[in-house]
Image 1 (tube, rainbow, N blue to C red):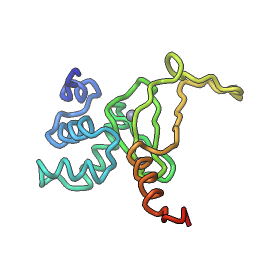
Image 2 (cartoon, protein in one colour):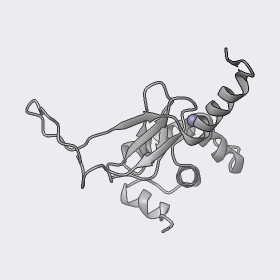
Image 3 (tube, rainbow, N blue to C red):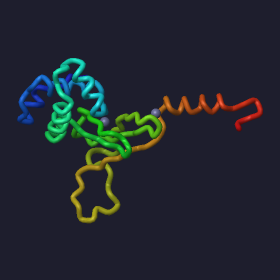
Image 4 (spheres, protein in one colour):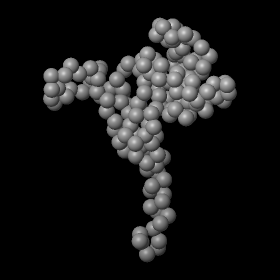
Length: 154
Ligand SMILES: [Zn+2]
Ligand SMILES: [Zn+2]
């Protein structure tokens, strides 16, 4: 995979290249769909002097600039990722909140044709597929078998 050039991304967005901004970009690229707390911990592991507020501000600035994408499935904290501009969707585990990427369903953005557009010019569709991740599915079936007594499931 091509390693993104974070410095160029920042310059192209007219943002000053700073160590904390580079650290946030690196953290999000290494941990796609990380939430804010995870990003803060990753950044501060390398740069302990960077404040929580600074990381919040950087995440917002980078999202506003389109370098990062902010997603927030219902009931979840905001998550960030560096994969932007391809209108991909997400599958979310109802049980543990794990998130994975799902490529655009049909062709390119908005990829889904709305049955009614209400006169809007639609340029993007954001789909969240909900389900159970393989790990949670495996745990659930183990639990089911463990609670099954010789007389059957109570
Ligand atoms: Zn899960
Ligand atoms: Zn994603």
